[in-house]
Length: 189
Image (cartoon, rainbow, N blue to C red; front, top):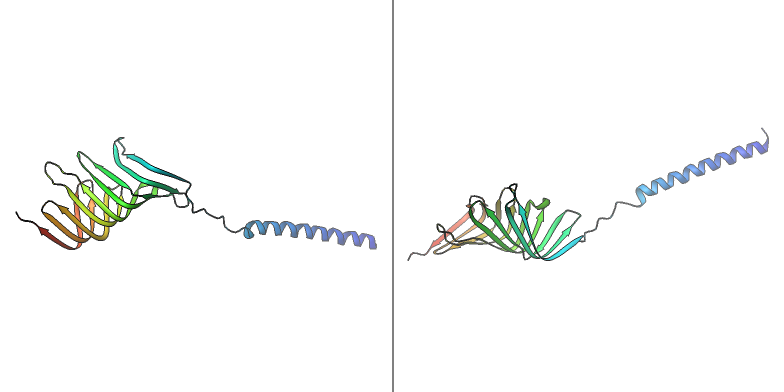
């Protein structure tokens, strides 16, 4: 083989190897050098002084949620609220109302976590007096209509004060379960 042909063959091999190396380097850079996609922890929208009403399958109001400020975070699809107020409606019964310092809505509205100081009230009816509960860090399951906390709770109604640690409420039926260390004081008149 002549020197010129040998030189041309070596040059062709070098060009092919260089082209393959360049292509391989670009594909590796695209995959690994860029790293994972950066997820923004900033809200994608916010609202001030909002009211939202969730409807049940019959098209009736299930619960209403209000807050002075709401911000939606797309990275985990959560909603952060300031000074939330929530009213959970019950079939032909007085609704439960809840106020808190802050709130977090997760799982597409299934769970509402009320944080800081939380006040719950069941309105006065012909059969029951006004019932007020003060606690912290309450978790509400809007689908099951339950609420629970592990924090201290104080329950008051005219002539009665009860303190306990932790509680569960079945909002639909109105039943309340105290979890530990319950103490009651009754005013006799």
